Length: 291
Image (cartoon, rainbow, N blue to C red; front, side, top):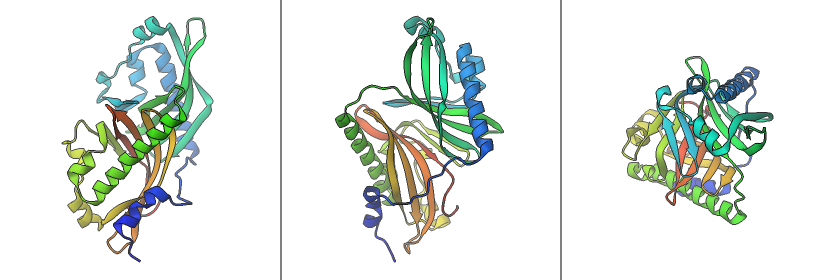
């Protein structure tokens, strides 16, 4: 039975029970993930950027509420440890590995969350929170490629609800424009620099005119028989007033109403100058169908 574009878009608001979740099952991947995090925190505590860069993959993305910083190469990345010491008397940082969660994984990419603390020279914790990483394998090297943190800011329930509402609208606007084949419209619900991780690669769009965020709908129709896409589930997993993580599952459909592809993903939304937009999209392997 054919489904109208309107009915499929409404799936965004309804959700689909029993949507498959891609979770880590491979012991080797879990071991590599922990090893990558351990290498990173050891290098971080040396306060040596040369050491730290060796634990990363590039381009490396730092996301914060309101935007992103992208280091295209190792030479572009640095952390000012001297400033951290002067401002906060920083001495070292630590991960609490008992809190480590592998949220989703594939052969070459892992989404993880872990609690962290920062300590001063008196060994007192002066900052703590939860940090999220995307860890990738590039040319055999497992390294951190994206980070974003949530430090408790005591956001009110109203602020969190408003954040979710604004972020959801940006997702709906994206899929509405996508299904209309509106190339310009697709670029509007994004925040820049926009980062897209899929298929073992990373694309960064610095502005709306970048070709990496301008889909070729004609090519999709010709090569895939694509007609439209739907959101099967959309769950806000972590929320602050300027940043929302969505665990999202979407599907692609043929003109006859048959689904041919279902993909789980992480979308990170930010509010930049009052504009809620998609800052990062990380796609995991399809749970149904293949390209």
